[in-house]
Amino acid sequence: MANTNLSSFIWSVADLLRGDYKQSDYGKVILPFTVLRRLDCVLEPTKAAVLAEKEKREKAGVNPEPFLLKKTGTFFYNTSPLDLKTLMGDQDHIAENLRKYMEGFSPAVRDIFERFEFHTQIDRLDKARLLYLVTEKFTNVDLHPKVVSNAEMGQVFEELIRRFAELSNETAGEHFTPREVIRLMVNLLFVEDGDVLSKPGVVRTIYDPTAGTGGMLSVADEHLKEHNPQASLVMHGQELNPESYAICKADMLIKEQDIGNIVFGNTLSADGLFGKRFDYMLSNPPFGVEWKKIEKEIRKEAEDKGFDGRFGPGLPRVSDGSLLFLLHLISKMRAAKDGGSRFGIVLNGSPLFTGGAGSGESEIRRYVLENDLVEAIIGLPTDMFYNTGISTYVWIVSNRKPAARKGKLQLIDASAFWQKMRKSLGSKRKELSPAHIEDITRLFGNFVEETRDGVPISRIFRNEDFGYRTITVERPQRDEHGNVLLGAKGKGKGKPVPDANLRDTENVPLNEDVKTYFKREVLPHAPDAWIDHEKTKVGYEIPFNRHFYVFKPPRPLSEIDAELKGVTDRILTMIGELSK
Image 1 (spheres, one colour):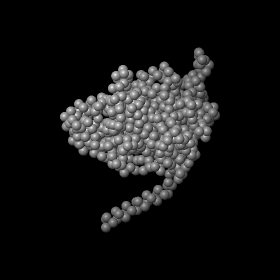
Image 2 (cartoon, rainbow, N blue to C red):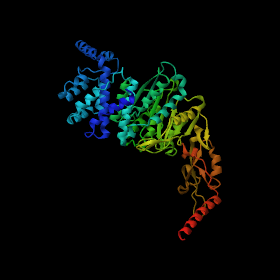
Image 3 (cartoon, rainbow, N blue to C red):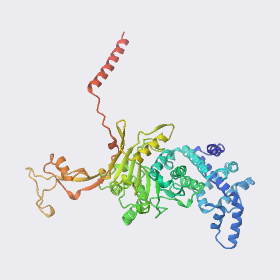
Image 4 (tube, rainbow, N blue to C red):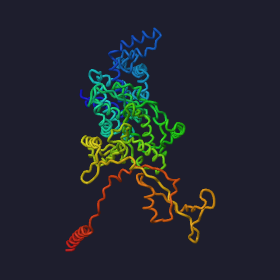
């Protein structure tokens, strides 16, 4: 059975649920049951051996777990004598027996079903007299690995996740990044490492701190396997939403990944993979979400640990935590001497320019640019995500830049690279075609400036081009006769007293001499002004759109007059015809 047919066949269980379940809740039954049936099929050939091994080891007073895992040859086991086929033989006790069967799974698998709140669904289906029918329907689907490979099963499960996400549209965006955006990010991560990744048996690690249902990890895995079937990607992730976490962990289990690497909880306040470093990382953190709930823990880490923790460079304002994820990922990079790391993160526009010199945001930008960590920032089209239509940007960050990129930052404006979707999904009305993805990847990989139809789409800057100094310009207080007042004591003795009402600030580009700037821009207008150097601050901002703005001169007046005359003449003709 082809993958789409298989997922459609599984989804047809929805026909049984109609009326008793809302559409947006179908997935709460279908996803855990799919996982259950797959595990049931995977364990079937070793069932008898596992039960015998359990008895033998328990008799010897030994913890049977490592021996049971060895028998199953996978990352999980079940010690119950029951399976789905045997449950079918006792219709009257289906709920009780299903619970007993579930209890026999290894702890990591039980955790998945607990986060799915599967026990609630068992009760609900039992009350609606649907439990036996639903279990029977799944028991008749053959999901044995000989029939459906891990890769195919992964695709089937992802198709089910997608259907579920589309039906529960109001929250889909929180846990779901569009596939083509992930494909683009994965391309950008891997494009410079083609030589290494094509070697037989190569193993690399990847991590997503906001893993959702595991889409980013899965696409990265698929991409690598397409290019090199002998390569393997060890996946790691953390997720805060219990249902998304369960789906992600189940997806990894189906793909025979070690699910111990997928952890539950808030990545920022409780890093579940503390001290681990990764080769590649991907993240689409929530846009513009405040971090008030975890403010205490974050501030404590920043104050106590400084640069030994994650938040040494600075903290953004409490209303938007996305830059905290950027800092978290930087802390997870392997040291450059150990091979380094590269990661991609999707952010909204605010991290590019919010906050003046000395603010938390500016200090974070300063840290990443002065440490030469940003390879490129790619502006995506609007209306790309399910839950927001705003402009978004992909940052590619690395501590192992190729020689040509050192000291430089590439900006790519891909806001015009889109096609209209046949059917909108929530706020998502546009998508990237495979050709668009290829084009953006090529622009990034070639690392050259490019203009099309007179419009720049790829520009390359030096890191310091985004830096500036905010200088404080003072002017003297004067008495009623216009004489300058001088200080009478302390440091200011004999010096002009600054007038707070006339105080002003100027932003001077880092690569320009402050004195020269001051002489040219300030003194001609205020000859009595001076700079208070003690108040000077360094800031960084990335005014993305300004660098791609193309001035279009207004049309000549004669052309506009001629157009207006034409319109007036037409109106007069029409009035004339009406009055005939």
